Length: 306
Image (cartoon, helix red, strand yellow):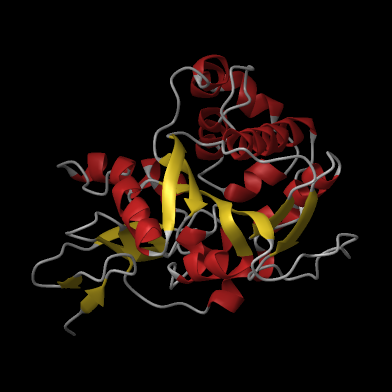
């Protein structure tokens, strides 16, 4: 059957005659034996899922919604929270600012912000449980100082709606912080040879996060889409917010551990297998040097509403 697609970021058209299809298997237990089709936009270089899926069913047992548990994972999340807040502060975020966290997951970042005197509220379109009751009096449309979305836009079938929501909620001059994969840094093309291609499929498994990632923008494509929606970029970090110089508190360590566990996201939310840690040199190498030689493929971009 002939296939045609439209890029969710720039609107470029693609079809099976001109656009290669690439495959990535799932990295959660429910989809570990299933491969999903993706294609790269020829114009903005976004990576997009070819086939529609039932999003409500996907998130029934989503591991990330469990939140941080265990000392190592709590340290990982704590670094993410600190990094996200420091990026907002670079944009001039003031104390007691009103912050809307879209895609809050378990609500850890909202709790982190409120504990530091900010007025934070969260919402998550994919969470299966109701969020904790908020003690913050929300300012309403046009009154929020910041809108944050960490690893959210790539989960949306229609990612540009995120800019519409931020435009509606933010005050003039308000901050929009987006963290997501940088599609241009993810190599989809497998090397020649069956063994090499199979290894490549495993190597990109965690970055692709199939089938949950629906539309991953490139840095240039994200900035163009944001500017078209009325936002100007003011600060950029080209790495995941969990990356630090503390041993093991970095993305490379988490990915190395997940790969040693069969590229299973669930492994990161289970008790640590110390036998695996002690016997896999790649985990040790990532723990020691992952904060210096950072895992590529992610970006954090701060915009201002103009």
